Image (cartoon, rainbow, N blue to C red; front, side, top):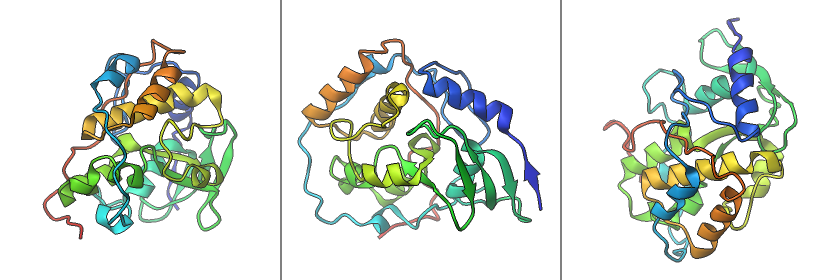
Length: 236
């Protein structure tokens, strides 16, 4: 069985994020850097509209789950697990993550053991697919929706129970219980919504500003994958 230790680098990255600090650079797996300017100022670049109906939303409209849009022969879920976990154990294929540690989980601040098949770790869409659908994604071309669903900028390994309680909440209706991570979390949402042109409601914009006003130096994440999946991908 292959083994990969990324503990030192990943632990520093998570601790910096939880503390609201900044970190420069983009990793090989496409994770975000924080060189995109002040997140608070970027909130004003987001269009403000009302939430559209959820009519027509289906997970399949964003393509099959965890598509290999970066063509590295590993699915997106395993890419994010390798990026966000420490002490990662890989299967013989070099892709499938069999165990590791999420330490700490950004949403709760707790360490969580990951074991394949008995996982308490989810991969969260920081901007939920349903939220995006109601704020512009329903009108996108299929390849843009597939890119959005698999963009490392929009994905985080997190505590499963907390993630499922989030549902499709936006910043006005849900924030991580770990208050130390809220600035980084909202900055991440701003970055994703600006990158893909997802609009915000008036209440959501106000909530974003309230959070980021407490950390005006919080940087805006950048990076991730292109906003259109390769031509071989399509969705219904």
